[in-house]
Image (cartoon, rainbow, N blue to C red; front, side):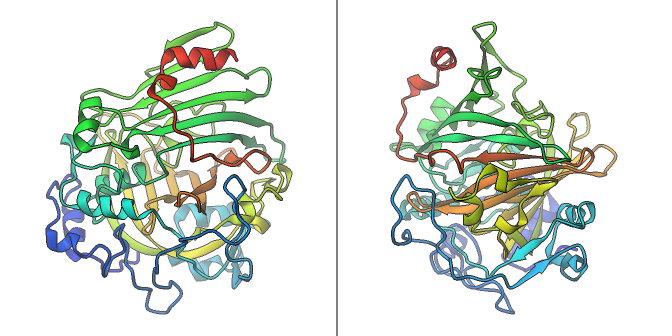
Length: 455
Protein backbone atom coordinates (compact mmCIF):
# COMPACT_ATOMS: atom_id res chain seq x y z
CA UNK A 1 0.00 0.00 0.00
CA UNK A 2 1.40 3.34 -1.07
CA UNK A 3 2.14 5.59 1.88
CA UNK A 4 1.32 9.14 0.75
CA UNK A 5 3.35 11.84 2.41
CA UNK A 6 1.28 14.80 1.27
CA UNK A 7 3.86 17.07 -0.37
CA UNK A 8 2.42 19.57 -2.81
CA UNK A 9 -1.25 18.67 -2.56
CA UNK A 10 -2.22 20.55 -5.70
CA UNK A 11 0.30 18.59 -7.76
CA UNK A 12 -1.05 15.32 -6.40
CA UNK A 13 -4.58 16.32 -7.32
CA UNK A 14 -3.58 17.08 -10.88
CA UNK A 15 -1.56 13.91 -11.15
CA UNK A 16 -4.43 11.69 -10.14
CA UNK A 17 -6.92 13.26 -12.54
CA UNK A 18 -4.77 13.03 -15.66
CA UNK A 19 -1.30 12.29 -16.90
CA UNK A 20 -1.05 15.08 -19.45
CA UNK A 21 -1.64 18.21 -17.38
CA UNK A 22 0.63 20.79 -18.98
CA UNK A 23 0.21 23.78 -16.67
CA UNK A 24 3.50 25.34 -15.60
CA UNK A 25 4.12 25.94 -11.93
CA UNK A 26 3.81 29.41 -10.50
CA UNK A 27 6.61 31.65 -9.25
CA UNK A 28 5.32 31.11 -5.72
CA UNK A 29 5.70 27.34 -6.13
CA UNK A 30 9.15 27.73 -7.66
CA UNK A 31 10.23 29.85 -4.69
CA UNK A 32 9.85 26.78 -2.49
CA UNK A 33 12.96 25.38 -4.18
CA UNK A 34 15.92 25.87 -1.87
CA UNK A 35 13.62 26.72 1.02
CA UNK A 36 11.15 24.10 2.29
CA UNK A 37 12.12 22.04 -0.73
CA UNK A 38 15.65 21.15 -1.80
CA UNK A 39 16.94 22.83 -4.98
CA UNK A 40 15.83 19.75 -6.96
CA UNK A 41 12.35 19.62 -5.43
CA UNK A 42 12.64 17.06 -2.62
CA UNK A 43 11.26 17.61 0.86
CA UNK A 44 14.12 19.20 2.77
CA UNK A 45 12.84 18.09 6.17
CA UNK A 46 13.22 14.63 7.64
CA UNK A 47 10.35 12.26 8.34
CA UNK A 48 8.25 12.02 11.48
CA UNK A 49 10.23 9.32 13.30
CA UNK A 50 13.67 10.62 12.31
CA UNK A 51 14.62 7.55 10.26
CA UNK A 52 15.00 9.86 7.27
CA UNK A 53 17.04 12.95 8.23
CA UNK A 54 16.79 16.43 6.77
CA UNK A 55 18.74 17.15 3.57
CA UNK A 56 21.62 19.50 4.40
CA UNK A 57 23.34 19.74 1.02
CA UNK A 58 24.51 16.18 0.44
CA UNK A 59 28.19 15.43 -0.19
CA UNK A 60 29.92 18.69 -1.10
CA UNK A 61 33.54 17.53 -0.87
CA UNK A 62 35.37 14.24 -1.29
CA UNK A 63 36.76 12.29 1.67
CA UNK A 64 40.38 12.91 2.55
CA UNK A 65 42.77 10.96 0.36
CA UNK A 66 40.52 10.83 -2.69
CA UNK A 67 41.98 11.82 -6.07
CA UNK A 68 40.09 12.12 -9.34
CA UNK A 69 40.45 8.81 -11.12
CA UNK A 70 40.16 6.74 -7.96
CA UNK A 71 37.30 4.43 -7.21
CA UNK A 72 35.33 6.52 -4.75
CA UNK A 73 36.06 5.69 -1.10
CA UNK A 74 33.25 5.23 1.38
CA UNK A 75 32.48 8.59 3.05
CA UNK A 76 30.71 6.79 5.90
CA UNK A 77 33.17 4.04 6.93
CA UNK A 78 32.05 4.08 10.57
CA UNK A 79 28.38 3.38 9.81
CA UNK A 80 27.13 0.04 11.11
CA UNK A 81 24.26 -2.18 9.99
CA UNK A 82 21.14 -1.25 11.99
CA UNK A 83 19.29 -4.47 11.14
CA UNK A 84 18.73 -6.86 8.23
CA UNK A 85 15.57 -7.53 6.28
CA UNK A 86 15.33 -11.21 5.36
CA UNK A 87 12.79 -13.73 4.10
CA UNK A 88 11.94 -14.42 7.73
CA UNK A 89 11.01 -10.85 8.70
CA UNK A 90 10.29 -8.93 5.45
CA UNK A 91 6.54 -8.81 6.16
CA UNK A 92 7.29 -6.49 9.08
CA UNK A 93 8.74 -3.99 6.57
CA UNK A 94 6.43 -4.68 3.60
CA UNK A 95 5.03 -1.12 3.51
CA UNK A 96 8.57 0.11 2.76
CA UNK A 97 9.21 -2.40 -0.06
CA UNK A 98 8.08 -2.75 -3.66
CA UNK A 99 6.28 -5.84 -4.93
CA UNK A 100 9.43 -6.72 -6.83
CA UNK A 101 11.62 -6.49 -3.76
CA UNK A 102 9.19 -8.70 -1.85
CA UNK A 103 9.32 -11.23 -4.67
CA UNK A 104 13.12 -11.41 -4.36
CA UNK A 105 12.77 -12.41 -0.70
CA UNK A 106 10.24 -15.06 -1.69
CA UNK A 107 12.26 -16.34 -4.65
CA UNK A 108 15.58 -16.58 -2.78
CA UNK A 109 14.63 -17.04 0.89
CA UNK A 110 17.96 -18.54 1.91
CA UNK A 111 20.24 -15.89 0.45
CA UNK A 112 18.57 -12.57 -0.44
CA UNK A 113 18.73 -10.00 2.34
CA UNK A 114 18.99 -6.25 2.83
CA UNK A 115 21.54 -4.91 5.33
CA UNK A 116 19.94 -1.62 6.42
CA UNK A 117 22.21 1.27 7.38
CA UNK A 118 21.53 4.80 8.69
CA UNK A 119 20.04 7.00 5.98
CA UNK A 120 22.52 9.45 4.47
CA UNK A 121 20.99 11.97 2.09
CA UNK A 122 24.24 12.22 0.14
CA UNK A 123 22.83 13.34 -3.23
CA UNK A 124 24.27 16.62 -4.52
CA UNK A 125 24.83 18.58 -7.72
CA UNK A 126 26.82 21.70 -8.61
CA UNK A 127 25.29 25.08 -7.77
CA UNK A 128 24.68 25.87 -11.44
CA UNK A 129 22.39 22.83 -11.67
CA UNK A 130 20.34 24.13 -8.77
CA UNK A 131 20.10 27.56 -10.38
CA UNK A 132 19.15 26.10 -13.76
CA UNK A 133 16.50 23.92 -12.12
CA UNK A 134 14.79 26.95 -10.59
CA UNK A 135 14.76 28.68 -13.98
CA UNK A 136 13.41 25.53 -15.66
CA UNK A 137 10.68 25.18 -13.06
CA UNK A 138 8.50 27.97 -14.47
CA UNK A 139 9.26 27.61 -18.18
CA UNK A 140 9.72 23.89 -18.96
CA UNK A 141 6.90 22.19 -20.83
CA UNK A 142 6.11 18.78 -22.21
CA UNK A 143 5.59 18.63 -25.94
CA UNK A 144 2.29 17.26 -27.22
CA UNK A 145 1.82 13.73 -25.96
CA UNK A 146 4.75 14.11 -23.59
CA UNK A 147 7.25 12.69 -26.08
CA UNK A 148 9.70 15.53 -25.68
CA UNK A 149 10.32 18.73 -23.74
CA UNK A 150 10.94 22.40 -24.40
CA UNK A 151 11.98 25.41 -22.36
CA UNK A 152 14.54 23.57 -20.21
CA UNK A 153 18.30 23.06 -20.16
CA UNK A 154 21.00 21.76 -17.78
CA UNK A 155 18.91 21.34 -14.61
CA UNK A 156 15.93 19.19 -13.68
CA UNK A 157 13.06 20.28 -15.96
CA UNK A 158 10.13 19.63 -13.60
CA UNK A 159 11.33 19.78 -9.96
CA UNK A 160 7.72 20.00 -8.77
CA UNK A 161 6.13 17.43 -11.09
CA UNK A 162 2.43 17.50 -11.82
CA UNK A 163 2.18 14.15 -13.62
CA UNK A 164 4.05 10.93 -14.25
CA UNK A 165 5.51 12.04 -17.58
CA UNK A 166 7.20 15.01 -15.95
CA UNK A 167 8.65 12.76 -13.27
CA UNK A 168 10.11 10.24 -15.74
CA UNK A 169 11.60 13.06 -17.83
CA UNK A 170 13.32 14.24 -14.65
CA UNK A 171 14.99 10.82 -14.43
CA UNK A 172 15.99 10.87 -18.10
CA UNK A 173 17.47 14.37 -17.81
CA UNK A 174 18.99 14.18 -14.31
CA UNK A 175 22.47 15.66 -14.16
CA UNK A 176 25.39 13.29 -14.81
CA UNK A 177 27.98 15.81 -15.88
CA UNK A 178 28.57 17.22 -19.33
CA UNK A 179 30.15 14.06 -20.75
CA UNK A 180 31.60 10.80 -19.48
CA UNK A 181 33.93 8.05 -20.70
CA UNK A 182 33.45 4.74 -18.94
CA UNK A 183 34.99 1.30 -19.19
CA UNK A 184 33.35 -1.72 -17.70
CA UNK A 185 30.93 -4.38 -18.59
CA UNK A 186 28.00 -6.59 -17.82
CA UNK A 187 27.43 -10.20 -16.88
CA UNK A 188 24.40 -12.46 -17.27
CA UNK A 189 24.55 -14.76 -14.25
CA UNK A 190 23.12 -18.29 -14.49
CA UNK A 191 21.21 -20.02 -11.70
CA UNK A 192 24.40 -21.85 -10.72
CA UNK A 193 26.38 -18.61 -10.58
CA UNK A 194 28.30 -18.99 -13.85
CA UNK A 195 28.88 -15.91 -15.99
CA UNK A 196 31.00 -14.33 -18.70
CA UNK A 197 31.83 -10.63 -18.52
CA UNK A 198 31.02 -8.64 -21.67
CA UNK A 199 33.39 -5.66 -21.77
CA UNK A 200 32.34 -2.23 -23.02
CA UNK A 201 33.97 1.11 -23.78
CA UNK A 202 31.29 3.80 -23.69
CA UNK A 203 31.09 7.53 -24.27
CA UNK A 204 28.12 9.69 -23.34
CA UNK A 205 27.92 13.29 -24.54
CA UNK A 206 25.02 15.15 -22.95
CA UNK A 207 23.99 18.04 -25.20
CA UNK A 208 21.32 19.04 -22.66
CA UNK A 209 24.08 19.80 -20.14
CA UNK A 210 26.99 20.99 -22.26
CA UNK A 211 28.51 24.43 -21.89
CA UNK A 212 26.61 27.00 -23.91
CA UNK A 213 23.45 24.92 -24.24
CA UNK A 214 20.18 26.84 -24.41
CA UNK A 215 16.58 25.67 -24.79
CA UNK A 216 16.49 27.29 -28.21
CA UNK A 217 19.65 25.52 -29.37
CA UNK A 218 18.32 22.18 -28.14
CA UNK A 219 15.09 22.72 -30.04
CA UNK A 220 16.93 23.68 -33.24
CA UNK A 221 19.45 20.82 -33.13
CA UNK A 222 16.94 18.36 -31.65
CA UNK A 223 19.56 16.26 -29.83
CA UNK A 224 19.47 15.57 -26.08
CA UNK A 225 22.52 13.33 -25.91
CA UNK A 226 24.76 11.08 -28.00
CA UNK A 227 25.94 7.66 -26.84
CA UNK A 228 28.61 5.41 -28.33
CA UNK A 229 29.39 1.89 -27.15
CA UNK A 230 32.03 -0.61 -28.31
CA UNK A 231 32.30 -4.21 -27.14
CA UNK A 232 35.87 -5.00 -26.02
CA UNK A 233 35.51 -8.63 -24.93
CA UNK A 234 35.08 -11.56 -25.45
CA UNK A 235 37.01 -11.84 -28.70
CA UNK A 236 34.03 -13.17 -30.69
CA UNK A 237 32.09 -9.93 -30.00
CA UNK A 238 34.95 -7.42 -29.80
CA UNK A 239 34.56 -4.49 -32.16
CA UNK A 240 30.79 -4.62 -32.36
CA UNK A 241 29.63 -1.05 -31.83
CA UNK A 242 26.51 1.04 -31.30
CA UNK A 243 25.77 4.74 -31.79
CA UNK A 244 22.63 6.52 -30.56
CA UNK A 245 21.41 10.08 -31.05
CA UNK A 246 18.54 10.76 -28.62
CA UNK A 247 16.22 13.52 -29.81
CA UNK A 248 14.48 16.30 -27.89
CA UNK A 249 11.24 16.14 -29.91
CA UNK A 250 10.75 12.43 -30.52
CA UNK A 251 7.61 12.97 -32.58
CA UNK A 252 9.35 15.33 -34.98
CA UNK A 253 12.33 12.98 -35.25
CA UNK A 254 12.58 9.63 -33.44
CA UNK A 255 15.81 8.32 -31.92
CA UNK A 256 18.55 7.64 -34.48
CA UNK A 257 20.72 4.56 -34.03
CA UNK A 258 23.45 2.78 -35.98
CA UNK A 259 25.33 -0.48 -35.41
CA UNK A 260 28.70 -1.70 -36.66
CA UNK A 261 29.09 -5.42 -37.26
CA UNK A 262 32.67 -6.73 -37.34
CA UNK A 263 31.82 -9.64 -39.64
CA UNK A 264 30.24 -7.42 -42.29
CA UNK A 265 32.49 -4.41 -41.61
CA UNK A 266 29.51 -2.19 -42.27
CA UNK A 267 27.59 0.47 -40.41
CA UNK A 268 23.85 0.02 -40.62
CA UNK A 269 20.90 2.11 -39.47
CA UNK A 270 19.22 0.39 -36.54
CA UNK A 271 15.71 1.83 -36.15
CA UNK A 272 14.75 -1.05 -33.83
CA UNK A 273 17.22 -0.06 -31.09
CA UNK A 274 14.34 1.09 -28.89
CA UNK A 275 11.48 -0.07 -26.71
CA UNK A 276 11.49 -3.84 -26.05
CA UNK A 277 14.22 -4.84 -28.48
CA UNK A 278 16.59 -7.09 -26.46
CA UNK A 279 19.54 -5.21 -24.96
CA UNK A 280 23.06 -5.57 -26.38
CA UNK A 281 24.64 -8.93 -25.43
CA UNK A 282 22.21 -9.13 -22.49
CA UNK A 283 21.18 -12.77 -23.01
CA UNK A 284 17.55 -11.69 -23.24
CA UNK A 285 17.48 -10.40 -19.66
CA UNK A 286 16.61 -6.77 -20.37
CA UNK A 287 15.01 -4.61 -23.04
CA UNK A 288 16.63 -1.65 -24.77
CA UNK A 289 14.48 0.79 -22.78
CA UNK A 290 15.46 -0.92 -19.50
CA UNK A 291 18.99 0.49 -19.84
CA UNK A 292 19.66 3.12 -17.14
CA UNK A 293 16.43 1.84 -15.52
CA UNK A 294 14.41 3.65 -18.22
CA UNK A 295 15.38 5.49 -21.39
CA UNK A 296 13.90 6.52 -24.69
CA UNK A 297 10.47 7.64 -25.79
CA UNK A 298 7.68 7.24 -23.22
CA UNK A 299 4.99 7.25 -25.94
CA UNK A 300 3.82 3.63 -25.59
CA UNK A 301 2.61 4.09 -22.02
CA UNK A 302 0.12 6.06 -20.00
CA UNK A 303 1.97 7.59 -17.05
CA UNK A 304 0.52 8.17 -13.60
CA UNK A 305 2.14 9.97 -10.69
CA UNK A 306 0.83 7.82 -7.84
CA UNK A 307 2.43 9.76 -4.99
CA UNK A 308 5.31 9.32 -2.58
CA UNK A 309 6.33 6.62 -0.15
CA UNK A 310 9.15 5.83 2.22
CA UNK A 311 11.14 2.89 0.90
CA UNK A 312 14.31 0.89 1.44
CA UNK A 313 16.55 1.49 -1.57
CA UNK A 314 20.18 0.72 -2.41
CA UNK A 315 22.04 3.93 -1.54
CA UNK A 316 25.70 4.78 -0.88
CA UNK A 317 26.92 1.41 -2.15
CA UNK A 318 30.63 2.17 -1.92
CA UNK A 319 31.58 -1.40 -0.95
CA UNK A 320 29.97 -2.64 -4.16
CA UNK A 321 31.80 0.12 -6.04
CA UNK A 322 35.25 -0.53 -4.55
CA UNK A 323 38.30 -1.69 -6.48
CA UNK A 324 38.79 -4.14 -3.60
CA UNK A 325 35.67 -6.05 -4.66
CA UNK A 326 36.30 -8.44 -7.56
CA UNK A 327 33.63 -9.53 -10.02
CA UNK A 328 33.82 -12.94 -8.41
CA UNK A 329 33.03 -11.32 -5.05
CA UNK A 330 30.05 -9.45 -6.48
CA UNK A 331 28.40 -11.96 -8.82
CA UNK A 332 26.94 -14.60 -6.54
CA UNK A 333 24.10 -16.94 -7.62
CA UNK A 334 20.60 -15.39 -7.85
CA UNK A 335 21.62 -11.82 -6.93
CA UNK A 336 24.64 -9.65 -6.16
CA UNK A 337 26.44 -10.40 -2.92
CA UNK A 338 24.35 -8.92 -0.06
CA UNK A 339 27.48 -8.44 2.07
CA UNK A 340 28.59 -5.72 -0.35
CA UNK A 341 25.25 -3.90 -0.47
CA UNK A 342 23.86 -1.03 1.59
CA UNK A 343 20.15 -0.24 1.91
CA UNK A 344 18.69 2.92 3.41
CA UNK A 345 15.22 4.35 3.92
CA UNK A 346 14.51 7.24 1.53
CA UNK A 347 11.47 8.96 0.11
CA UNK A 348 10.66 8.07 -3.48
CA UNK A 349 8.18 9.21 -6.08
CA UNK A 350 6.04 6.33 -7.35
CA UNK A 351 5.30 6.44 -11.09
CA UNK A 352 3.13 3.83 -12.81
CA UNK A 353 3.30 3.26 -16.57
CA UNK A 354 0.58 1.15 -18.25
CA UNK A 355 0.72 0.09 -21.88
CA UNK A 356 -1.56 2.10 -24.16
CA UNK A 357 -4.26 0.30 -26.10
CA UNK A 358 -3.04 -0.58 -29.58
CA UNK A 359 0.65 -0.56 -28.62
CA UNK A 360 2.90 -3.53 -27.97
CA UNK A 361 5.65 -4.13 -25.44
CA UNK A 362 6.64 -7.18 -23.41
CA UNK A 363 5.89 -5.13 -20.27
CA UNK A 364 2.20 -4.41 -19.79
CA UNK A 365 2.91 -2.34 -16.70
CA UNK A 366 6.00 -0.82 -15.09
CA UNK A 367 6.26 0.83 -11.69
CA UNK A 368 9.20 3.14 -11.07
CA UNK A 369 10.42 4.26 -7.65
CA UNK A 370 12.38 7.50 -8.12
CA UNK A 371 14.67 8.97 -5.45
CA UNK A 372 13.33 12.40 -4.48
CA UNK A 373 16.82 13.80 -3.88
CA UNK A 374 18.41 12.91 -7.24
CA UNK A 375 15.61 11.80 -9.62
CA UNK A 376 17.44 8.49 -10.11
CA UNK A 377 15.11 5.51 -10.58
CA UNK A 378 16.09 3.25 -7.69
CA UNK A 379 13.80 0.28 -8.34
CA UNK A 380 11.63 -0.74 -11.31
CA UNK A 381 9.00 -3.48 -11.18
CA UNK A 382 7.96 -4.84 -14.59
CA UNK A 383 4.80 -6.88 -15.29
CA UNK A 384 4.07 -9.10 -18.28
CA UNK A 385 0.94 -9.10 -20.45
CA UNK A 386 -0.85 -11.38 -18.00
CA UNK A 387 -0.30 -8.83 -15.26
CA UNK A 388 2.23 -11.06 -13.51
CA UNK A 389 5.42 -9.66 -12.02
CA UNK A 390 8.11 -10.48 -14.59
CA UNK A 391 11.28 -8.59 -13.74
CA UNK A 392 12.62 -6.29 -11.05
CA UNK A 393 15.55 -3.93 -11.52
CA UNK A 394 17.65 -2.36 -8.76
CA UNK A 395 20.06 0.57 -9.08
CA UNK A 396 22.89 0.55 -6.52
CA UNK A 397 23.82 4.21 -6.10
CA UNK A 398 26.87 6.24 -5.09
CA UNK A 399 27.85 9.91 -5.25
CA UNK A 400 30.59 10.63 -7.81
CA UNK A 401 32.32 13.38 -5.86
CA UNK A 402 34.20 15.03 -8.71
CA UNK A 403 31.01 16.06 -10.53
CA UNK A 404 29.15 15.77 -8.08
CA UNK A 405 26.25 13.55 -9.05
CA UNK A 406 24.26 10.70 -7.57
CA UNK A 407 24.28 7.82 -10.08
CA UNK A 408 24.30 4.05 -9.93
CA UNK A 409 27.52 2.06 -9.74
CA UNK A 410 25.70 -1.13 -10.73
CA UNK A 411 22.24 -1.96 -12.10
CA UNK A 412 20.86 -5.47 -11.55
CA UNK A 413 17.96 -6.81 -13.64
CA UNK A 414 16.27 -9.88 -12.14
CA UNK A 415 14.21 -12.14 -14.41
CA UNK A 416 11.80 -13.94 -12.10
CA UNK A 417 10.86 -16.57 -14.69
CA UNK A 418 14.35 -17.76 -15.60
CA UNK A 419 15.66 -17.00 -12.08
CA UNK A 420 18.67 -15.30 -13.62
CA UNK A 421 19.97 -11.75 -13.38
CA UNK A 422 21.99 -9.30 -15.43
CA UNK A 423 24.52 -6.99 -13.76
CA UNK A 424 25.41 -3.82 -15.71
CA UNK A 425 28.14 -1.35 -14.75
CA UNK A 426 30.87 -3.70 -13.57
CA UNK A 427 33.92 -1.47 -13.26
CA UNK A 428 35.72 -2.65 -10.12
CA UNK A 429 38.53 -4.17 -12.16
CA UNK A 430 38.62 -1.27 -14.64
CA UNK A 431 39.70 2.37 -14.61
CA UNK A 432 37.15 4.74 -13.09
CA UNK A 433 34.68 6.86 -15.07
CA UNK A 434 36.23 9.97 -16.60
CA UNK A 435 33.88 12.96 -16.35
CA UNK A 436 36.54 15.39 -17.60
CA UNK A 437 36.35 14.27 -21.25
CA UNK A 438 34.99 16.78 -23.75
CA UNK A 439 34.37 14.86 -26.98
CA UNK A 440 33.40 16.60 -30.20
CA UNK A 441 30.23 16.04 -32.20
CA UNK A 442 32.31 14.54 -35.02
CA UNK A 443 33.18 11.62 -32.73
CA UNK A 444 29.51 10.59 -32.72
CA UNK A 445 28.93 10.02 -36.44
CA UNK A 446 28.41 6.75 -38.36
CA UNK A 447 31.90 7.24 -39.88
CA UNK A 448 33.42 7.50 -36.41
CA UNK A 449 31.49 4.39 -35.37
CA UNK A 450 33.09 2.41 -38.18
CA UNK A 451 36.56 3.61 -37.21
CA UNK A 452 35.84 2.74 -33.58
CA UNK A 453 34.72 -0.78 -34.46
CA UNK A 454 37.76 -1.52 -36.62
CA UNK A 455 40.34 -0.64 -33.94
